[in-house]
Length: 254
Image (tube, rainbow, N blue to C red; front, side, top):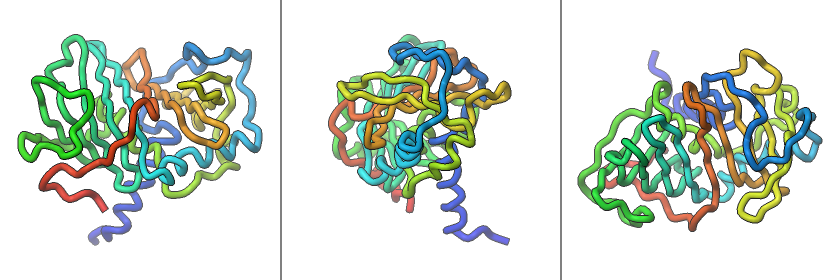
């Protein structure tokens, strides 16, 4: 029996939610308390009610804002990738410039992605920011991989950091979310919170951390990724947010 379109869309949203909050896409066990710059604590502690509330609304804050400017750092032994762009959490589209180092520079150019598809537009001279109007030709596309690609994992994580409703604040501490320190990001004093499903579990799929402001605004997210010694890092508001236009000739997801 065919799955109704609305049911399939809700299923994709649930997958994105899991990716964003619990780092369900990561599959490597990592040490939990090693990020540089974070105030060290002997042991993580349980979230206060206020901290749980802030973590619960963090993804909703991104959706509420419509979108965020992001810089996504993707680790790779051959040379990392940096994506500078914006994510629209209403349409579930990301768009920006991708640059590589080392042997990864051959993929420099424009990138746009959704929950299911990655579009790339190679460029010899990559601009600092993606053009407001994307080129009308020269795009290549492929399915977004759910495993085996650090880049695609990073793209999925970035999209999953928005939700059209808050998470359940009571369930977060029960599932292992914990406070692990304080830090400063771009002049903002933030609390660093270990995401649910990672604390104190030898079989944990991975580790995700959130740098949260006093109103629940995300300023940074780090997530461990399989087979990579360095995490994927999503920094917010590193530049001015731009509208995310659909790739010409491709209808945006609904």
